[in-house]
Amino acid sequence: MSTPADALFSPFRFSSLQLPNRIVMAPMTRSGSPDHVPGPDVAAYYRRRAEGGVGLIITEGVYLPVPQSGFGPRVPAMYGEAALAGWRRVVDEVHAAGGRIVPQLWHVGAWVMPHEQVDPAAPPLGPSGIGAEGTAAPGRAMTQADIDTVIDAYAAAAAHAQAVGFDGVEIHAAHGYLLDQFFWSVTNQRTDRYGGDVAQRTQLAREVLGEMRRRVGPDFPIILRFSQWKLHDYAAKAWATPAELEAFLGPLMAAGVDCLHASTRRFWLPEFEGSTLNLAGWAKKLTGAPVITVGSVTLGDELMARDRAAIVGTTGLEPLLERLAAGEFDLVAVGRALIANPDWPRLVRGGQTDQLRPYDPAALATLI
Image (cartoon, rainbow, N blue to C red; front, side, top):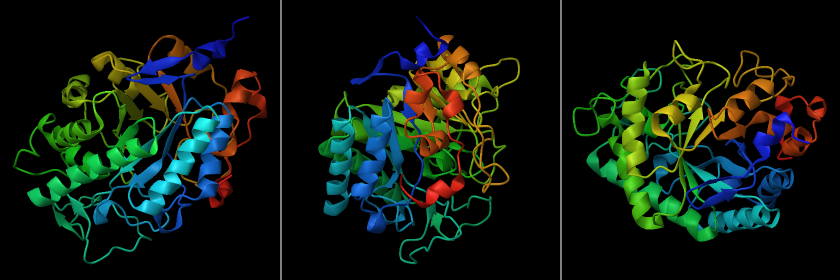
């Protein structure tokens, strides 16, 4: 007997990656890796989600082999013998549980959290030396040498991920971090080939993709995560119309992206006037590519709501399932609900959404 949730549990393939269902674990920074090394607890954390039925796990953001990639001392890295050994353990545990896993490659650029300590010898870098709030950053605009170093770092991290057994990689190009700083006209005011119109501002990302492809080959899946919103500006709109979004996505797809991950805070909100399609829906319509949607799935409040300490209740799945069945997007990323419910897929498949546990921010203190 078929159920409304069946579409969520049908297999899906993109590039060389065969997935048992449409459920993706969204990347969520957990800061549980002292000295940037993921330990056995990190491996167990991801294994529990694979055992719970997640089809594809996207890890928390991981730093690249370049000093300015990030400044959190407990965020994992994709370089160094100890960190790579830790990731090999993570991959082995997830695979043993029947899951698939990719790391999210992350460079923060000029966005630095207030509590993070910046090394004066390696100040933050961005396209134009403009900080996240549109003011002067404590760092500087990137030189060509800086750009070449970053391109090499992304590609080296992808090659490391492939070597330790990951099933692909995701590039974090959203939320106001480095690549997104190049995409956005507010933070990218360059007059060289890395600046200019919507398409020209994808130049750095395209060069990153080209070098990654050169090192990992044509069949290693690459996902690209993008967003309109920024951590400091939820109302930001880098692309005001579908035509601008198409001008942005087209060059990236041509450069080697296999799947698009359209990050929104609430999946049910339309992206442009005159259509009910969300950002993922528009990305699929404009490119025909496999697309992941995300944003407060089965939660009653959006990511980073005003009261971040509040326990967030659960909601039903009907609007999401209707959109998935209609082909608006292909895959569904679940975030905070998977922190609260490692067995989220099992409960959903069994029609037990009423048993989903509310998301409690206190759960962020431990890897469970």
